Length: 258
View (cartoon, rainbow, N blue to C red):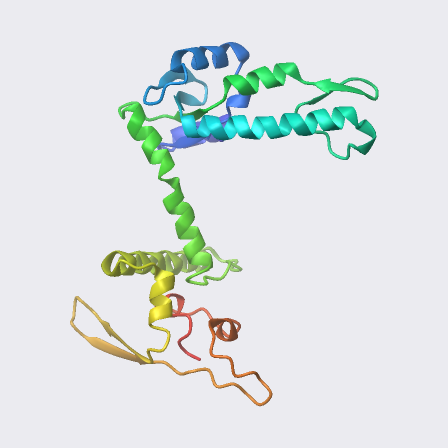
């Protein structure tokens, strides 16, 4: 969720945004209006203008089932804490302190949670796109999250410890290009980059071809030779400690250069 100041900065920069809305910050009257209009029906949308941009809400039966299940667990936990206040270490969400050492269920919060059941909200400043496309684009966010996981795990890209802007930007470019290469390999082979790495683990020579000049470059790998006393384990874990970041090929094939 963006703050009001961040929203204003984005607008002044001429950028567009789609972010998740915190429905808990909405007024009870607006929540009732949203819940009434959606009426637990999938495929329809509620829209209204707010200071954060256009608010779009939709309903999902699957989300409603999860919300209902989570709320039941929280209510049971709250009831147990109310019955045994001396054992309470961290107050449950639905526990309300009525007087000192006297607790009860927060009925107002329970009613608000029931109104939000199955409803998801989105803020955007895009005016010309239909609601279903905006919601669909927000749900595509998992692709970006997957890219971050690939960069940190499969490509083993290091965190940034640079200070100069040029060094930071160069590092980001190298990681981004390696992600592009990894995605290209996945699309071309139909396998995940992790599976591709496992398949070519024993390949010692790699030929790179420049598609613009047709020049060929041969890169010969060197296997890790265990020193005296070092266990001879032919596994990735034995190699990862020796990985050094370098050019794109090293990010994509982190076992090379041993």
